[in-house]
Image (cartoon, rainbow, N blue to C red; front, side, top):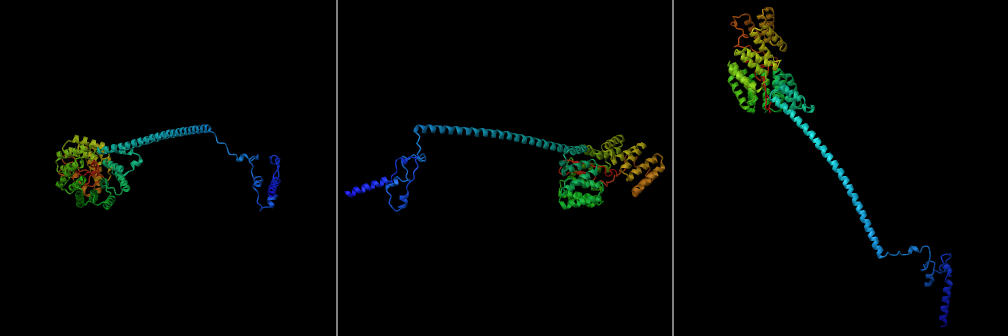
Length: 508
């Protein structure tokens, strides 16, 4: 009992010894924590009461500055929560509504901009399309007008229309072909060859219109160029009828008519519907005096293409050689109805009319022909012959002097001028012109000169004064004979070309 009380008293003393004064617990009085006992006795068990009131402990009524840090915030009441929830939801709705309105306005703005830009693009595209369509239609209209004009043999109009094309459209092989054909129709072979040369250099494998090109070369006696063209076409396509026609023209130019006939026959075999080959073959038969075969070829050409007026011209030529002048005039007129601008057809109609003793009518026909082609040597020669036959020597001499400038190396012109001077009593001038005619053609002019000075040899009949035997026509430089004469065939087109000024004599 006594021991227990001693233990309790000791415990109390220890407690009071370790305890702090009450005033020292105030936050306003700084105190030092006695740590000597704890530090000096680390292994000693510390009582719970000591731990509770140590410096490391936190008292419940401690009023230190750091107290608020550990205070748990009070949770709001239910009403406050509801109010806050409503405000937050309302703010969120307002925010979403504002955002949606912003997005909608932006979308509308973008849509308006896109619509306006789209409309502008569509308008620009439609405008460009309209301009391109109008340009294309104008181009096609211009080319169509030129094609129609050439089909109607309005060659000068064709040249004018094609010359108005834009440069990038004009410098094409097809347009060059049309230009070459138009100039060929006008008997301007130099210009025709120029355009055909550009076609051949620009498109070496093109066969269209090369037969016309070869005929133009044939008229101007360009043997080297024609041979080179034939060689190129053979290397390109030896199975095409145009290739064989070009080769036939080449042999015809070299006076190898039998070989030329074989080549034209080969062209007919390759393409039986190629009417231009029949026409060329017919003219070669005329050259070799095989008139029946020539007539058959011309009728085959007419059967294949009734608008191929060159075949009608060939039929008229055969009738003229047979002195069936009425039938010849009818066939020439049929050819003229297809190509009313051909000065050569008009010239041959005038020759037939002169043979039929229709001198005034023949003179009017020659005037019309020369109006269409003022440089037509054949027409001017025959008109001078008619003037001479009518006794209009001054007009005949004027006509022949102009003709001498056009064809300075034609013996027939000098011979006829000599006859005019002989009729006018200018014997010295007559002998001078006869001498020049003999120098140009020693074989042909000698017999005519003898007839001019010795009427007994010529049966007292002047060739130029007899309407039944019209004068033998001259051939301008570049003409050889009737084979390939003046004809053209534009392969793949609806028109065929006219005869030209280098037609062989209808009255041999």
